[in-house]
Length: 178
View (cartoon, rainbow, N blue to C red):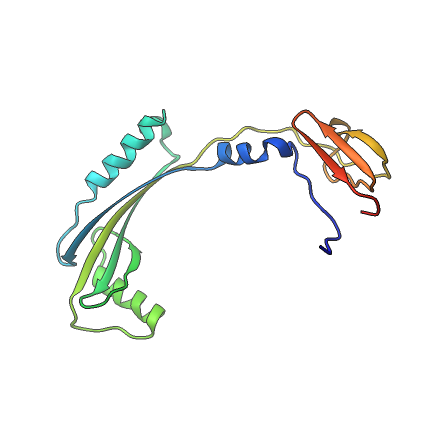
């Protein structure tokens, strides 16, 4: 494949599970509305649905203070168009102006005077996770052959093959001349 080096992450057998553990929890809910932009949309049922989904996973929204982010979004279009532009909904903002500017950026023109429709409302609730902390590893360099215990290696260690690196959750093979 022409790769001059490979990085094997710490605990590779658990890497996918660790990613899931460290990922932010995100819940989304949407609802089609098809109404003109002059009306103030009600996002509260969507936000309530997202918060119920968090509680169902054992996450108390009240206990996530400082880590909880609620985003209200709307898919907007000019009447008669069949494509929408997703924009953050900001109460009190001039959404007509914001949509026209977004339309100009994306398509190079806008349609002053044309009615703007809200097609879909979306709420996205994100909870930042507090992941585990791992102690840093000290780097080591050298030429190793044979079987190596991963616990003996530090961050930035360079291994030349052939070698087998063993640890509790994975085995890494390093081929000859690599």
